Image 1 (cartoon, rainbow, N blue to C red):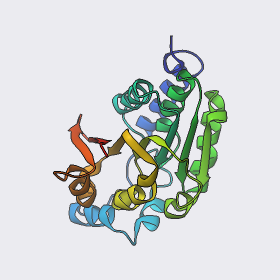
Image 2: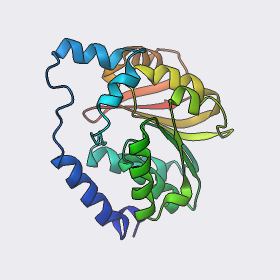
Image 3: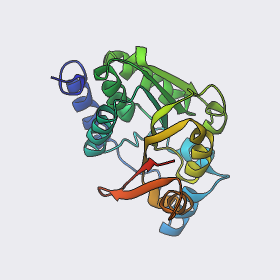
Length: 218
């Protein structure tokens, strides 16, 4: 038995995924493929872009959620940082792993106030709110201070253009063996070049359809 597969979390996740799947994804209607890619990679327009996406769930897939839980459990993670709370589906998976690891702390950050409020409601409903610190605001500010001395797992699932910048903020706390999961990392070629660099600080591999899994080696 795990927190992930039993009440109240299992039924809550079923409901949240159903709601997410029923929400039309029309935020990029009217944008060409090139314009969408430009916005995804912009380091100056990300706040405007994600303001347009405030009504979308933007969740990880069910498979990625289970992967996050498994990675956090297997690594016996006690401290986790998440960039991009959205409505909290990935947060719930990570917090469930902390619960089953015996406790810990998850710091997650989201700049859209309405999403922060709903994510908090979901964490309360899942019985996991006591493990999670949601920081509201631009992650370049909310993660600039007050991080744990050691971080076991980092999830990157916010503005793709900021993946290298968020890594800069967290890297000093990442211990050898810590894991980084980057969702949709193909939209951040600068990040991929960094974690895949031969002789660099990471071992990295594309995992599943849209996830880059990296481990810090030094």
